[in-house]
Image (cartoon, rainbow, N blue to C red; front, side, top):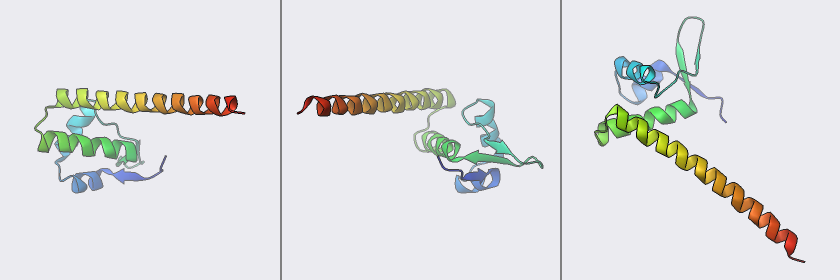
Length: 102
């Protein structure tokens, strides 16, 4: 995982959103500040950056409301988890087949 962090101001500029939008995402627990410096500046890691990108696209381009966004994000996480499990099973199957072939 990358150690790259984006400062809150960078996020606001990149996604051309208002501060209250990011505050709303945090209050709804759709996005979590990854770290905060001693002066109170918030930073977001790459995963949170990606979540903000997805949320921004869903709300702006597809007019999805926040409860809908929450469902979509949960489904996305479930699909990613299932994909990892599938890859793991496939890897084990390949190893098993290699062990059976003389």
